Structure formats: C-alpha cells, structure tokens
Image 1 (cartoon, rainbow, N blue to C red):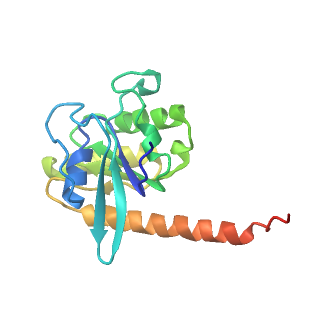
Image 2: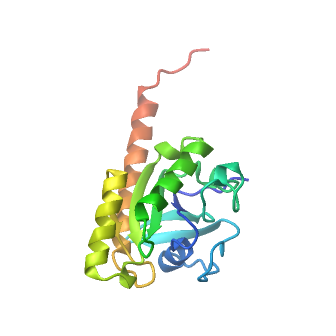
Amino acid sequence: LKLIADAGLVGLPNAGKSTFLSAVTAAKPKIADYPFTTLHPGLGVVRINAREFVLADIPGLIEGASEGAGLGDRFLGHVERCAVLIHLVDGTQEDVGSAYRTIREELAAYGGGLAEKEEILCLNKIDALDPETLEERKSALEAVSGGTVLTISGTSGKNVDAVLYAVIEALDHERDNEARSSRAEPEEKW
C-alpha cells in the first residue's frame, strides 16, 4: 500500500532526513552516521501552531536508483500522493550541486509526476559549516536549482520552522487549486 502523506522528505543517504523527521514529529526513526540507515519509509505528524500534516521519510536515493542501484526507487511511490517534497541536501558535501541534480534526475526517471511536484529545497547541516562555506554552498545550490534555498539544521532545529511554514503554505495552495478545479469541472449528465 502506498503511504498517504502530505509532504515527503527526499535526498541522498545521510542528508539528514530521519533527523529532520525526528526533530519535527514524535516519530523515532533509526538515526546513524552511515548510509542507508533508513530501510523503510517512516511517517510522522507535524504539529505547528493550530495546523498539522503528515510527513514521510523516504530512504535515501543514489545515482542509478531508477535502475535498481542502492535501495532502488521502490519507495518513491510513497511520495506520489504528496503535495510537496522537502529536498534535503547535506551542506557538508563538497559538491552540493551534484547532490541536488542526482535526486532531481532520479525523480524524473521514476516518473509519476514527482519531478513536477512543488519542492522546498533545503541546505541541511548548516551547524557544521563556517559562514563562508555556508554562503558558498548556498550560492552553488541556488545556481544549479534556479530557486530559493532554505538553510537549516535538523540537529539544532535552526530554521526548521521556516520549512514547516513553507509546507503549510504549499498545502494551502494545493487545496485552493483543487477547490478551483472541482468548481470549474462541468457536471456529468446521465
């Protein structure tokens, strides 16, 4: 069965997805400093102000996942129903642009509309970076993605609320679009 979640966490192994899930929900995923700690999708309920949404943690993807490398792409079906993807990029990596492109390519190769979903792009683990390196990696990620990059730390919680509010905004936008679509569709006559 496909998980039903409002938002899904995607990224390379060790991008901090499980740490983020445990920081914003009551979920207790396995967290370790080696790749492929998460072997199965995890779910948690995020509560912020008077709102809540379900967040799915998807096992890390690697290059070639769509062809079966690593854990493959068998878990991506779990985020097909998500309205928004939170894409975490490990800021301690040298080439954050390559990490971003790898995930985007795997989402496109999988299909199912994943590459077209709204994406909240986050440079994670900023607590481990000096200000100069942080700015360099954020700029590199903005250049390759062509969009806004939020800088966060799932471990310390820095700027995590900004991501959660962005998800709420995306979910509200999605619901508004669905409501407009349903009003615009002509009724069927039998």
